Amino acid sequence: MNTLPLFGLSVLMSFIAFGIVTGTYIWPRLQMARRDEALIALTVPHTFRFIGLSLLIPGVVSPALPSAFSFPAAYGDLVAAILAILTIWSLSARAGLATLMAWVFNLWGAVDLFVAFYQGLFGVRIRPGGLGAAFFIPTVLVPPLIVTHGLMFWVLLRKAIRHAASSESRGLPGANVDPLLKPLH
Image (cartoon, rainbow, N blue to C red; front, top):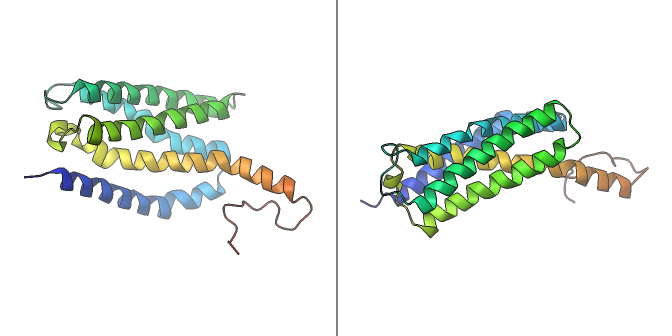
């Protein structure tokens, strides 16, 4: 039986389910939150990315799982988890480099997820069964992590866009409205 369609359907359903969670609970609160609060909330789930180390444990994954996939994915996730912890700490402490730390984490974390997905599907072409119990990492955990990275990019860029828009239109009514939330005419 070809399990790849079931894998794809599982990933799609995870994106849909987390899209519902995001639209119902996360998005409304993000729009009202301070920047640091929003970034912390979106970063917290990434502190669990150490779970990617399970890709290195025989019995959890198939012994046939290529190390060309498992090593970069596992250690990339570990680095992302450490960067997430450092980002939360820097944002909580309102450190001078907090925004830079958030950018570094978000770029590393997003690229790591996309590289692992690409490498797994097209590089070494692993079959979903080769993931063993770790099947749930790309099907249940990765889609919400990708969504939170996208939301973090929105939060990080929102201030820069808002600042540019308000400096261009000083004195005009509505200049302080977030341009991403303005209706298109």
